[in-house]
Amino acid sequence: MFDWVHTVPILSIVAYVPLLGALVVMFLMKSDQGGLIRKFSTGVVVLDFLLSLPLWFAFKRDGAGADLFQFKESHPWIESIGARYEFGIDGIALLLVLLTTLLGVLAFLSSWGAIRTREKEYYIFLLLLQTGMLGVFMAMDFFLFYVFWEVMLVPMYFLIGIWGGSRKLYASIKFFLYTLVGSVLMLLGILALYFFNAGGLLGWEGLGNPATFSILQFHEIGHLIPKDLQFWIFLAFFVGFAIKVPMFPFHTWLPDAHVEAPTAGSVILAGVLLKMGTYGFIRFSLPILPDGTRQLLPWMAALSIIGIIYGGLVAMAQKDMKKLVAYSSVSHLGFVMLGLFALNGPGINGAVLQMINHGLSTGALFLLVGIVYERRHTRLISEYGGLSSIMPLYATVFLIITMSSIGLPTLNGFIGEFTILVGAFDRAWWWALLAALGIVIGAAYMLWMFQRVFFGPVTNPENASLKDLSRREVAYLAPLVILCFVIGLWPGPFFKVIEQPVKYLVEKVDPTLATAAAQAGE
Image (cartoon, rainbow, N blue to C red; front, side, top):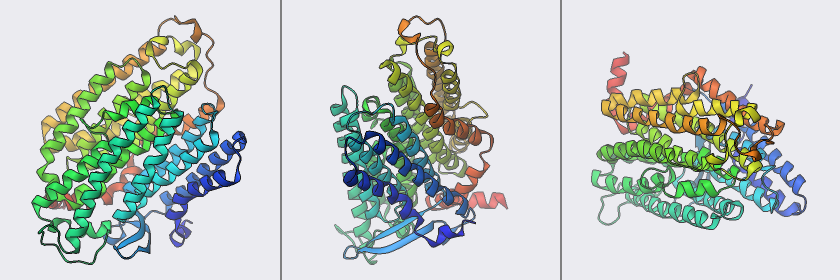
């Protein structure tokens, strides 16, 4: 039924539909057509989501080796330096592409009631951001990947800087500078790989291969790179990706960006942009630099565990709901990084699934906080209380997402965290012990926030007239609630789609472990 997907450049279509929509809004629509621009832009991302759905059904779960990356497109681009226009996705990228197109729709719907100034520019930037994010997950050429990585920064900078809160300029500049510093170091790492492959640089005995930026080729030759060189290239990639995750101590831009960004910006920032850092480690650092990865493994685990506990403790001290959710991301992404650097099947499986889980649950939390902020124009926990009696439907959805975030069984967060703990315990039992402490802290600050906001008497008279969820708000929250239950009760299809990519990754980064696992399976 979906064989046609393999006969068309489906990835390019999905990536550039938002760009085409942005061009239509930019050149064919007037600024005073706010309602039309809003509806047209939302229609574009809905269409893009529908176009991305066939990828799930047409994707071959048993693809391995050369067939691991599917829907591939390859065309000459900048031949003088060996850069090509190459798209392709494996199971990990597939899940992230679908998460991006889904959250894009929900972010646009959430903007209808929140954005009433400069709507034309706002929706243009959101559409451009969508194309940039999709391109990052689809690119199979280092140069192309870097182009999308940098292009993506610009619309997010303007979304925070123009439609953000009272400290929006500070937050947007801080976000841009932090990420730009990381991007420059990442570029140096890419160039080091490129020149080593093409014949050497600064005395390195290069391989002398034709100049290329092909990511798959570097997967094949990464183990040939000297250990000392792998160490320094890993550090260059580490800074770029760790800032984006963000890992401790590179996280300080995140709370400011989240708090000041409009609701849609926070949803996309937490749901998708942070995953680009973890995706970078999965696609580049682990398979291309296996010796560097193993050499720095203790440091990566230490920073991940510190992030888990530190993020949770700081979140517990927050008075602003949005800032609390922002710091919870530092803790949750620490879990993801710990799973990745367990360097075994369960850990990486759990890390990838938890990337999706975090996008769903934290994206939903930012949407929920945005809803009461639109009504009351405050996010202070002390301004609320007793909302469950005034907004029962809102309280129910908030409770479900809270339980998802803290990892209650039957919901998605439990599956991801449990699998990560299995992988961490397999690597070192005390990793799992310290990470479990982070789960307890996470339950404490989330339940404490929920108790203060929703239980007790309604002490603030301004809350007495608050309206419950509208039909539009139910429409964009319902898919997230449903997916939280689907993944929690039936995670098999999600693990199946990433099974082969994870096995491939383990074989690249730790061949001895992969061999032992294969022998145990026999």
